[in-house]
Length: 133
Image 1 (cartoon, rainbow, N blue to C red):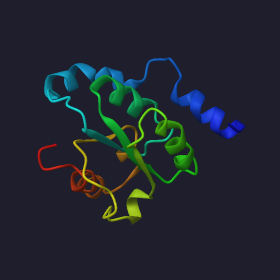
Image 2: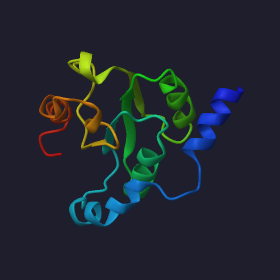
Image 3: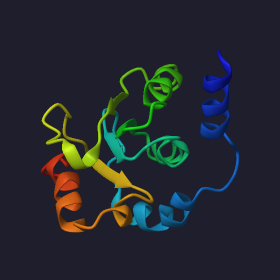
């Protein structure tokens, strides 16, 4: 593992509170089906700590997109624990997300406020959400 992988892995597996944990009581209310095969997709997923905490808690397989050069490293690191995970090097504003499989849960944490057209960004979130997601 090179230094860049090590640095990302340390950020990913850092044992500290992540702000997604504030939402766990809400998620607990709505996420009843934790059967195998469920997926969670995060827009802007690097470094991945929140997504990992979510997926471990609810038994989902992580996937996501980011235009960070670290997305391939994140994919490599998580494949050990989640062999079915899928990560995409995508700039959210320029993609139609046709190559992304629909997910049971779609997340973004600290992303949409960076865009002027929030409605368009939320539409992309909805596009990859399964009908029963």
